Amino acid sequence: MGNKDICGILTVVQNEVMKPLVSLLGVVATFLFLWGAIEFIAGASDEKARSTGKLHMMWGIVGLVIMAVAWIIIKIFQSFFTNSVPGGPLCNIAF
Image (cartoon, rainbow, N blue to C red):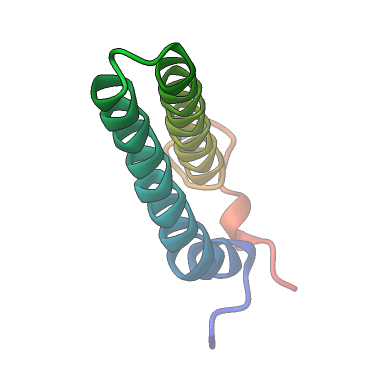
């Protein structure tokens, strides 16, 4: 990590922490949704199993939405600190 300006730090945080974390949590949310769908279908005759499946599917969708919003926030910060935004060359701030 020889680059100690703010863009270097943000790039390391994004590539080494945020991308793997968002990807992992996205996989978990997808698994939760699919598990809920299987529970819902398998428990078609049991009201309790269907409601549990619905709940798992709902939380899976909530997790996927949270991961999408986190990814959008990462992209907003990334564009804010690059030269592509007028008045946004904040990458030259060194620590």
